[in-house]
Length: 68
Image 1 (cartoon, one colour):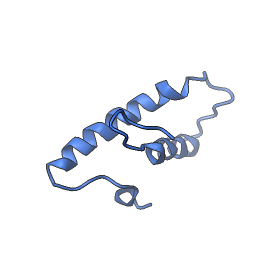
Image 2: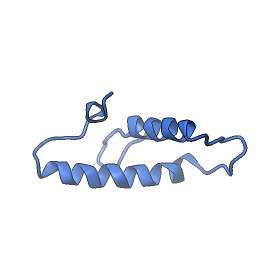
Image 3: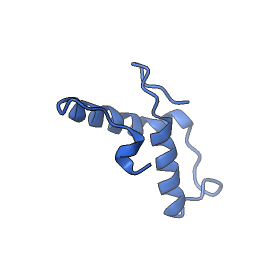
């Protein structure tokens, strides 16, 4: 489970990024391995920015917003 400091679970966003990487042909076995935390940083930043944008609309981002 990946949690933001405020307790927001972004595991689904990390899994989504992993799926996109797999579809793009990213081969983790042959590529330089980065730590899970450093891989999660861009996702955390994106989720944080998106949550901030959506708070203005008085709603929260959920996996359903991505068709899941």
